Structures are given as structure tokens and as C-alpha cells.
Length: 471
Image (tube, rainbow, N blue to C red; front, side, top):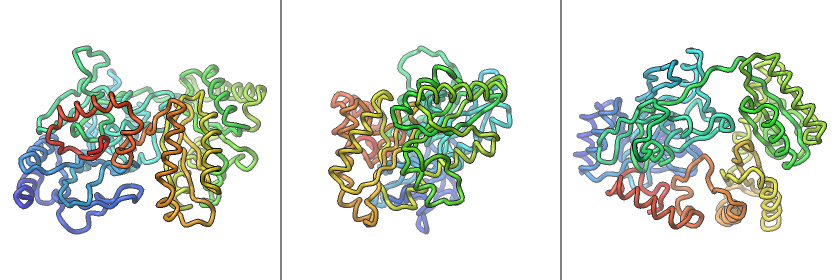
């Protein structure tokens, strides 16, 4: 059966665009190296029609499909299992920016386009696509939409779902749904677009998207503030929103240990103010009038914050290069954590008002239950998303620690998240890593509806099986 399927796929994609045997590790290893699967083959179609034909062929031969973009996901949702019977469907060849409609404020782009390439293309046209995350040099638009990616601009612009106006999708039967309209208002039934966004390739294969664009800001300023507590960071956020309004485009928080890891593993980077403060905040503001106006507003904000005690020291970037250096420190935290050793990652969201209580309670709980554990807390405080990560105690083998403690620590953290009305996944998705846990932490009614949708759209269960919903 697989020989006949492979022959069909060679005919559809061309012999050079079907990878069989050899080194497929780039498609079989997940981003964090938590899992190595084994693919039947890797198909690289060059058009929507080819994607549709690939899906039809897999339906005929009853072979499961794993859609894949840049393979930068953190929830093990875009690599095959170990059976050797699943086809990886890579969208990497479909990487074109098809059209920019400046008057409508939209861009139409293929799913395999790398996020950074899209950002640069629209910037060259004098416009802004504001989705921004650490993997933007590798991740693709289809993957961003499939996981409903967040990143650093959610506070102002929303996540990937908020930035998408239309999709083209190949469904599980190999039919093409053309929903690429750039309309902001279309009240003609169920919102199919939002159904596919965040579905992690389990309901259909996103091939093209129409996305929102924004004017480039006249000025963009960045500040780094040392705050005495996490509650002070929340107070600073409220003050910044009151004084800057929609001009506030980024608000990141980092604990002292996370910044200490950057200082340890990347000594060439200058990490401001971290040694004297338990928490630091990175703020970004965009201004439509100009740098002088933006700087005056930012300085007034920081003065007011110091007066109310929510900030005790701050650095305001004096140039674009300095702003990039500050952001580079923030973006280096995951890399520094990897250098420190394997770790237990949690991508959680909690109502902003409850974040200080959640962190205080959960920090104390883990310190009591797992003595010596080290906590790497950082993330997008402005939208309630924390990366609440757990590092092994100093001197303990990280691999041994994960094998012994990961399940228990996940339970402790996720139970605390639910006590504070949060979610166990804010922006990374569920993948296969959290599929079994979703059964515990998601409403049974919600799970029943999700399974009904999956059954209706993919009755044979061939699209990314075992992801999001456990088999």
C-alpha cells in the first residue's frame, strides 16, 4: 500500500519533492528535542492543488497526515509518531507573499512563508504586520495560525486569530475552501476561519491566509524598569495603559533568576538592573506623531511610576540599537534556560489581577514539594501569559529530574492555574504533549463539542491524529 501511495505522491509533487529514507531528522525531531518520530515520507507540495491531491491520495490509502510549517512548535504537535506510517506534509515550498492591498490594510500570503520574511516585505511597502515572537526567523504563517500564536504584540494587536481575516484551507476530503476574503464584516453563518485557527492541523490544512496590516509607527521607544514586586509590575501596567492607551504595544516581565541565566550563559550581553531587583519589566510604546512626543510621554509615565512606588529604577533606550539590545535580553531567556539544561515548561495564562497571587502561591508550593527547585518566570504580563518554567535543583542531572518529577510538577502547576481561573496553554497549543492533560483540565462539555467537530470534519481521523484530542 505505501509503495502505491509513494508513487502517487511522486506524481503529484514531483520526484524531487518527495523525501523518502535518508536523513529526515529536520522533519522528525520536535523543536525542543523532546521527541524523534519516524515518517513514512515527507511531501513538499508547491501549490494548493497539490496539497489537495496529496490529501486525497492519503485518504485513498488510509495514511495519516502531519501538516508541518517551520516545525518550531513547543507542544510536539508537528512531527510524526514513531510508527513510520505517517506522512509529513510540509508547506515550506508555498512561501510567497501573493498581494498587498494597502487601501484594505491586508496582505495575502502562503502558509509556508517565514514570519520574518512577511514582516520585512510589508515593512518595505511602508506597513506593519505586528505578530512577533522569538522564532520569527524560522516559524511560518501556517504554523502561526494553526497554533494561534501570540508573542510580544498581543497587548496591542491581538494574537494570530485577531490578525487573520480570511483563509484558504484543504479539508480532510481534499476539497479546497476558499475563504480568503479580506472583509472585516461578514455575518453569513458560522465563522469557519476561526474554527481552523488554533486547530493545529487536526481539522484541515491551511494553505493561504489574508492578514491585517497596520501603518508603520512614526516612532517606537523601549524602556526597561526594575520593579520591587510582581504586584508592582501589575500596577505599572495599569498606569501605562491609563497614560499611553493604545500606544502601549509591549509589556514583558522577567524574574531575577531568568535574567541571571542570561547573564551567566551570554556574558557579552548587558542585562540592566537585574541584580538589584526581584523583577524587571520591558515596555514598548509606538507613537504616531514622532520620537519627541513618544519620549515625553514615556518619561512622564516613568516619573509617575517612580512617584507611586511601582518602579525604583529605569533605563530608556536612546537608540534603535539599544532597544534591540534590551529585546535581545528578553528573547535570550529561553536559550539561556536551554544552556542551563532540560527544563519543565509551562505556557499558562491567568487573569492579570490574579498573577501575583498565583506566582506567590505556586512558588511556595513547589519550594515545599520539590526542595531546591529553581523557577524561571517570564512572559507577556500585558495579556496574562506567563512562561512559568521549572529548572532542576543546582547540581542535579536535569534528565533524571525530568523523568522523576515532570508529571508531579505539571499537576501541581496546572491545578494552581485552575484554582486561579486560568488555562494550561496560552499560546503554544496542546499538541501531543498536553493532549492527555486536556481531558483533566478542559470542561467535559467543551471536549464533547470538540470531538463532535473533529468527527464531522475528519471522520477517518487522518489529520494529525493524537494532537489536541487524545486518541
